[in-house]
Structure formats: structure tokens, C-alpha cells
Amino acid sequence: MGPELSASASDEPTPAVRRRVVIASALGNASEWYDYGVYGYVAVEVGKAFFPGAYSTIASLLVFAVSFVLRPLGGIVFGMLGDRIGRNRVLAATIILMCVGTFLIGILPTYRTAGVWAPAGLILLRVVQGFSTGGEYGGAATFMAEYAPDRKRGFWGSFLEFGTLCGLVLASVVVLSLNALLGAGAMTEWGWRIPFLIALPFGLIGFYLRSRVRDTPVFRELAAEGGQRETARLRTVLAYWPALLRIGALAVALNITQYTLLGYLATYFQTAVGFGSGQASGILLIGQVCMLAVIPLAGSLSDRIGRKPCWWISFGGLLVLAVPMFWLMTRGFALAILAFAILGIFFVLQLGNTSATFPALLPAHIRCVGLSGSYNICTAALAATAPPISEILIESTGNNLVPAFYMMAGCALGAVALITMPETAGASLRGRDTPGLAAPGRRPHSRVTR
Image (cartoon, rainbow, N blue to C red; front, side, top):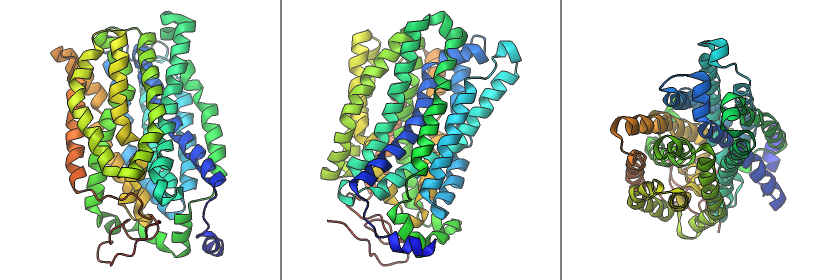
């Protein structure tokens, strides 16, 4: 293995190889967010099937949050494996675990059939999914970033999040179509299962594509030098604690907004605003299509003006517009579409360059474990509960603007981290130094590709 790695470590990927990498990486992210999208869009129906009673929707959303319990552990385990044995092997494993878990939710017996064993099974599967998802994003972002050209990392990396939105759009289309074909009664009774069952073939295709892509040139170069052996040392990872904290804070800002706009709003439109399931899915579908059109432009813009300016524009826009846009969402169907699209376009300015921002804050030998660990620990602790807490606060206070305030708090936290974040646009990701900076106790020798 060593000679092969050494001989090929400096090979520059061809455009055809990069396209395969984009498809393989994005498809995994699409699978992850298809699952979250489907669960969010049918949360009301899932609640009725597994948690009958007055608080069925809240219970269903709490199960959404429970899936994050093992995400930090999954991030650390799969992150360490990604830094030790390779990014692509880990990504092939995580996509299978995610999609099999989603499929099994679709065949679970309901509370009426199995009693308390039904919600117990649902919780178990969501926890298993959370464990596998913990390694998905950090590994996929690292994989994409390390294959991308240094000067166009934002553009290429944006397609990972393009996959995120594709998964959500597919979930919207599936749920919207089923609502139109089956009607509300059949969807509540059995139709909610169909979107979960579709995940299995989707995942098998992703597994096939990922297993056929070589590992990144950055990892092959590192492995040829024996640098990946440093990953096992906890003190090596913790030496980069400022970067880990920045990633965690930015991840909280990103995911509070993401889980609110792209997951929770499907429930919010039904329980707080009074739209039907089909209307809610339609609003999200139109807004997500607008975001899909803009996201490659957002990634490309970050290559031109830098990562930090894009994050600042996103945070500023969301802080100013969150409250008025959420108020507008309660004024009618057409205004809800407009408001969601406006918030979505501002959000895309951070979403579109996360895959270029986060991996570049850490050196190659701890990139997967550092990114996956900090991202998932902070997301699980502070962002995952946004949907159920928003729902509980809306019901207890009657204030439909609660999600807007939650998003604003997340953006404020992210803005604090952004102040000291280094600008890494154009920096090389190779080697054991932080891109553009010296590693602790070492002199800088990072390269920048012109």
C-alpha cells in the first residue's frame, strides 16, 4: 500500500475524476438530508402512528432530536477512521447505515400494533442513524475539499450542499406527490411509510459510487509519509482547540438555521400557521429550488471575495430579516413562499461555502476527527433541539416568532466565532500544518496554489 500511495500522492485529479467525486460525495449528503427532510415533512403523521395523544407532534420532534445523542460518538469514531484508514472507506460505510436505518423505519409496526415497542424501535433506529450520520458530513466535506482545486474550493465544495438541497427537494416532491395521490387519510394511515422505503435503493447507488472512487490526493500523500498515525493521539487533536471551538460555534449557527428552515418549517406551517401538509411541502419545494439555483454561485463568490465576507452577509441578513420574514409567513400562502425564499437565499451564503470553510481550519492528519467531533458535539448540544423547543415554546407562549429568535441567537454565536476565524480561501490543504497558518510549535510551510 505504501509504494502505491507514494507514487500516486502527487497526481492531480482530472476533471472527470472530480466530477465522480462530486457525485459520490453529494449523493451521500442527499441521502442524509432526504432522511431528515422526509422525517420533518411527515412528523405529524409519524407522531400519530407512534405517539398517539395530545402531544404526538412534539414527541415526534423530540425523537428527531434523540437521533443526535450518538452523533458526537459517531463523528469521533468515523472521524478517527477517516484519518487513519481513508476518507472513502468511511463514507461508503456511513451511507449504507443511514439508508438501511431509514428503510427500516418504513416497515416498523405502529403503536396500535406493537404498543411501546413501536416508539422504542423508532428511537433505536434514529439513534443508529445519528451514529452513522456523525461521520457523514465531516468525512464528505473533507473528501470534497481535498479533491477540489485550491482556488475553486468554494465552487466545488458547494455541490456537497447542492446534494443536501437535492435530498430535501426529493423529499418534498415525494411527500407532496403522495399527499396529492393518496389524500390526508391514507397518508396518516400508511402512506407516510413510502418515503422511508425509497431510501434503500438511493443508498445502494451511493454506496456503489463511493466505493469506486479513490481516496483523496491529500490523504494518499499523508499516508505515504506516515502522518496519519498521529490521529490516535487525543492531545494532538486538542492542540487545535481554537479551531475546534470556531467550527463548533459556526456549526451551531449553521444547523439551528438549517434545521429550522429546512426541517422544522414543514411542521411549523401545519401546527402554527394552519396550512395543510401539501401546502407546507409546496412552500418548501419552491424555496428549496430557488436555493438550488443560487448555491453554486454562493460557493463561487466565496472563492472571489473570501469565506468570511459570505458568512458575514448571511449572518447580517438573517439577523435583520428573521423576525419580519417569519411574521410574513403567517400572512398567507404566497407571502410564505416569498419569505421562505428570501431567508433561504441569505442562508445559502453560509451553506454554500461550509464545505470549503470547515476542512480548511484544520491540518490534514486530524481533519476528519477534528471536524466531525467538534461539528457534531456542538450541533447535538445546542442545535438539534431547535425544532422541538420551538414547537414547545410556540404552544406555551402563543408566539409564532419563536423560531426567528432561535435563529438569531445562533447567528449571533456564529458571528462571535467568525471575528477571529482566519481567511483560508485559496490556501492548500496538504500537509500537517493548518492551511495558511503554522501548526502549534511548528514553523509555517503551507503552500497556496496560484
